[in-house]
Length: 421
Image (cartoon, rainbow, N blue to C red; front, side, top):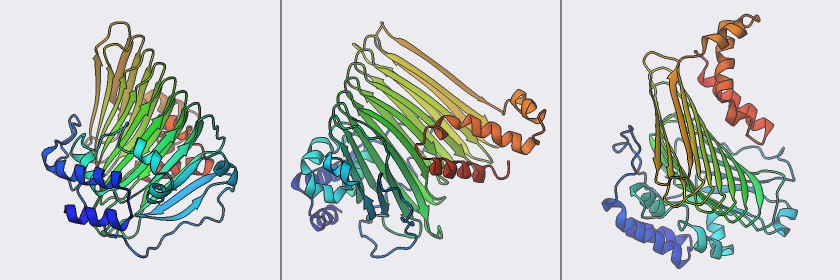
């Protein structure tokens, strides 16, 4: 297998440091443990698709004719970049939105500094080592210091559900000091959904001093795609990240969503909404680690469970010794819409410092009858009223998506999953 990895690296003309990361990680896969996701037994799932061969052709390429000319966007189909648009004003400001393998040639210094160096380490656990070894596509987004963008940077990643090609994708987002920008990300599947496959996806967000990022993502991979999704943040002094993540996947999935508040005054707001349906299993582990003084980490998780599905929310707030004045808050709420469903909401607070503020709330229940009564008393029938309540329950992420068309797309996904409610 190492020879296959080495051969792929040579074909891609990777710099020596990238090949060293791959081969070093490959040596450690078997000896490393799985990351711990409380109350989710996923270790026997099909998560290790290793085929690095690329497809030469594909169908389902989106229509790009109506894309706004003043926004940056990159689109990948499986492992290939099929469309990139970066306005001239952004290029002149030094903004990079680029295929990861192209960036190895044009911006190797950024990759050598940030790729698997800060937010995630290649030998952290079995899943990160597998990803580092078999990563076969991805992008680099870089906003230089003191650059402020008014339009979001968008990335679309499409997975061919009929392909044998591994979907091991890496997204590296770096905000230079005192920069500010928004980023919108979509993962989805296309095709006839004929093959079982896996995805090992990693997103690294590194924000230098004073950088501000609003991050929104909609994940909608297919029913036969088993996914390990790893989103990590390294947040510097006075830097802020606002995560807004909608987990609309149809297959089994484990999420590892972490933010390390490295610098004093750093902040991470992590909002996650999810719907589990049919026989789907979702395990969502959301963690904020307060390291800097007066750092703020808030977690908000809302989930809806239908049919025989299972959904687990683990909310972890960890204040390390020395993080004086830190604030760690979390809320996990689950709506059960079936007697056969299984839901868990597990708040975990780990406090190693005295001069801090921390709190948590968790609940699992049914649709609020008072809200239903209020809507129905105004002439709305029961089915529509229930869907409106559920949409409002998931609304924290809907309103944070920086695109009206993508908001509507997300609402349509919700309506599709609630079709039989």
